[in-house]
Image (cartoon, rainbow, N blue to C red; front, side, top):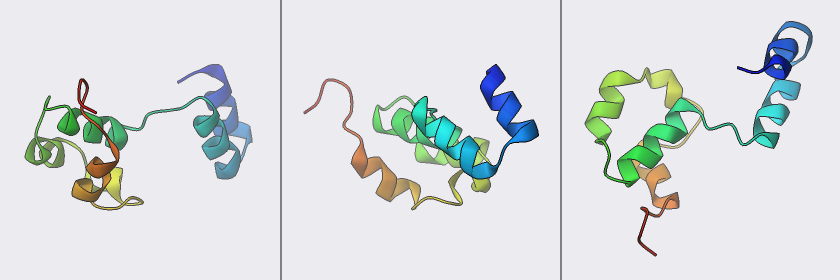
Length: 75
């Protein structure tokens, strides 16, 4: 967490926070997990075991999201 995120959390709005996180290309735990599954580093089962369901609550299912990523070295 950088100083700007900390400042927005205390004094800003959720809209400002989401906008800033998009600007800095923040990679959420959920999206990082999807990429790791796609790259063969872990499994969907392991991700679902470790991460809370809320990590995916505002997103399509994990299986659908993985279609957006191309594994490293492929494509």
